[in-house]
Figure 1 (tube, helix red, strand yellow):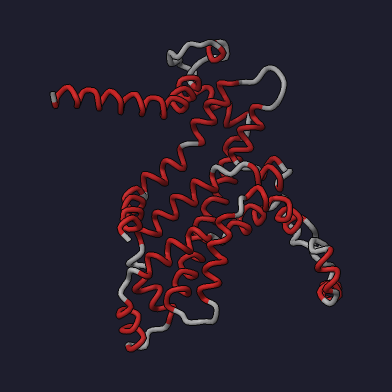
Figure 2 (tube, rainbow, N blue to C red):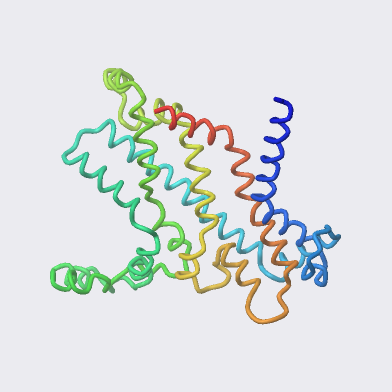
Length: 297
């Protein structure tokens, strides 16, 4: 009876994994087929994979798109993890007025969908900055203009890497994750470090960071995959094709009208999965332990 139940369980699990993995398997198989076969219902692997890969690299600028995504993903991951680490430390080990209110406001930002922020963020990032400090001061000295024309000036970062990186350096999720992790660390460690004369920076670098590698790894995996898969914001703020990211680049490969090279598209989609997969494989242990620690709190 137990053996029969085990077979049923395994059959259900195999069916579930097959259904979940089917889109990836479909893309991989189609990436190996010729231009004629890729439009057919056939799911038999072909021999054109390396030819499709060569063409998508040489003719569709996939390498440029992947380079841009890699730069943005690494910069955001490092910056966001560092800032979240420092913010979590401040919320746990420092005393300052309205600390609970500030933490509540940070959590409140989790409820704001990114689609709501796109238009005001676009204005702030794309509008040009004032010509001089005098013009900036004239704008600040008029509260009515700030109230009714808050988007008169911006940073002028449209079509730059800064537009892809800077708006995403702050993370309420990361701050919450590190705050919860630091609250589980005995406060006697902070007291001992303070008695020994350690500065806050030394306490962070020598005690908190070595005790937080699992949380750092878990957050790094999440943020890298999040930035790598971004589509809406790069599509809005980046107009130069040589600065576009891989997800928008795949859409550019598809293009419009007839004659879409679906073999190239499927090869590009398959290759775009490789960097996030490698990051997950490298940090898999920290990722699993980080969430195991979070669940135990």
